[in-house]
Length: 485
Image 1 (tube, rainbow, N blue to C red):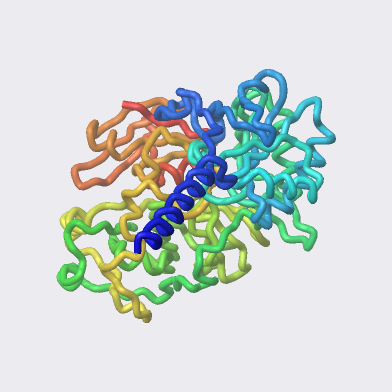
Image 2: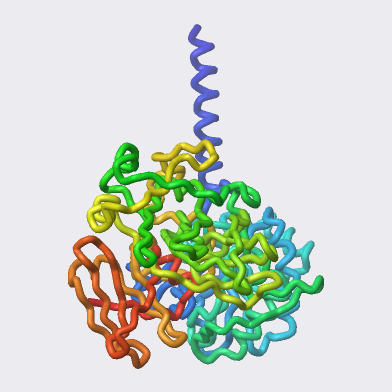
């Protein structure tokens, strides 16, 4: 018995010794190799962050030889391409030879830094030998820089000019055409370059586009998998009260006395209603991911056209298609972005987002979209959970800004090609804002019922705002100016 006890104790001691050795020498152990400068871990200021136009946060990471490399070492000397990658990522394998060629051809002006995400050095070295990659590779074992640069997928690439300003970025794989375009922009850059001009380009098959199709991501459901409502039915306020709560949001439109309400609880399942309001063909559109409820005239060449859900997203926004030409349109801007009607814009119409209680008080004779849509859906339940209040963004966007919570509600306007945003919070607090933007005197007001109007003060002319989550507005308009009370 004593001999057995001694044997057990000896085995136990050996196991403890082996565990201790593995803990000290463990080749898979993550060593602390990254230092993030203090300015990078504090709440980003307007000049520091990961959006286009921001100063790129400085970092220190070890390379494969354990030598520390600082982004700030290149400031004033060379432009930077910072690419987040992993050996197991197929798109990374396609991109890296292209980056290698760029590195070899532009060494005097350009440095490419590949930041590997949480892998061990040995397989990385084998990967680099196989793909003949010689540009600097840095290690991010604890994912601190990954979080700092908002990397939620692989690959992600930042284009940073000599002044340390983020000139461009891409979450997801880059096509050779995109790489050439963004590198050309980077090499010409002296400061942030931002243009709202829609440059029309052509694919090899003749398809015209202003947004490359590679930037359009599947939202999950296929084309028309989220079905538009093409023959909407309407009910009375009394009947609507049976299923719409007073605090629920609706889209409300009043076109020359024809008043209609479209409850969010229905729109969240359909996103597009092809309606006729007071004789005018209207597309009522709602993107749950962007918080954007927008009405457009749905006429092309003076003919009514139905719109459907393409199943694609651009900047996390609904991409519609028209059932006449199959052209793709992004919902936030109303632009035709891929297809026959490229470059056209739909005409925006006034529509309000407010509670059912406020809308029916203003318009007790309103018609209300019925739940009898021809489809079986869980109306009254949202499939998006707490998305509206969380910081999560489900799909990549091209431009980001952290000055506001990503889901903060803003009202955005375009004035002579420039963009400005007013937060709903400021409008609630102040009630009325007098402002001058791009040479135009503006008055922005929010009524007690929650209706926001923005006018050209001198011309007494209404400017139709877009109600949106902040992240979505900024994704499309990275040079937008934000009003501060």
